[in-house]
Length: 407
Ligand code: CTP
Image 1 (cartoon, rainbow, N blue to C red):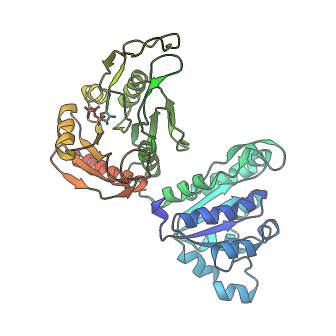
Image 2: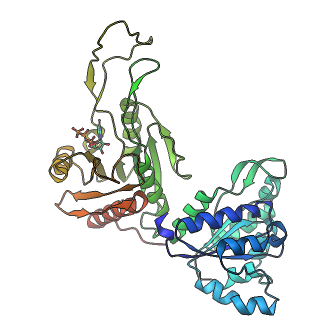
């Protein structure tokens, strides 16, 4: 996640069983290029050794307000003021109560009161504790103060129970930190985004598909969510974990994608067709497995409907964005598609170029809009390119008088 690069993240750990996951979290935050400092409650130091977190973060761990030596060398005020974001994970019921009461008797609560950086709080505890009105009230209070609350996962808990209360994986927590650091210029804006390949069945065991991994579309969806958007993600088959807050509609064929996207698009203010939709589909899928009886086999394929064209025909003033996967003459081919499909913006990429296109984490694109504007992104991570695309969409919306007020 490129947004965390060079950012100072203060990880505050309280004494839940999930405290052991903080070691992994430190590493994953560092993988994003973040500078991580750790503060712990007294109870957390009994769950995971401060030495471990000190070694991983390569900085002393702050855990005691009352130790003159420790607090003098780190300074809880400085720690809180230096942070670009404060992530409290896991947050126990006890810590939530102390935060909600505005207490400041330990390193973590003191930091929470001092900092002006965004606070991201990930409650984690036994499911019955989590649903208790006292805990709900405390969470509600913190949310009211603008703390970003990360909903816990459901599943098997360390205490032996099944249910809500699990600390989400590091990727989810990192996405929440990134969202807290992002502008909210699409707050409440509804997106319909397609992603991945389609599969056109030949028979019950075979299909025609393409090399799309779905990654670009999933990153566009994640970026829209980070910036406050509400996303319906219509996805062909992929191996990816969908962004947590997207409404996911799984489809297989181009026909299914068309149906799902037309429904999603009619409710959306922004449509982004990232999916690599099959242009042709077998006239009819065989109901039985095709046997290799002959030396050669001919397939009759029929053109699929162009989804983007159907969406632009819906009318209205939604922004419609297409992608163009090309292996040559990028600008001319993409500009022609923009015009032919009636798009507001097209993201053209040379899928033959190194580090660009299918099955890689990076991409390089030309962003061409209907008024003739053209921007070359250079080689970027797909997460960063997604934000560039959203910047262009925000500019197009602003041109139509639709400016979102940042929160
Ligand atoms: N697309 C679509 N419906 C289709 C095929 C493609 O909406 N049946 C969309 C894609 O999601 C993409 C854009 O059209 O946003 C361009 O896709 P691309 O495959 O580059 O172009 P095609 O229109 O399929 O043209 P060609 O394959 O001839 O380049």
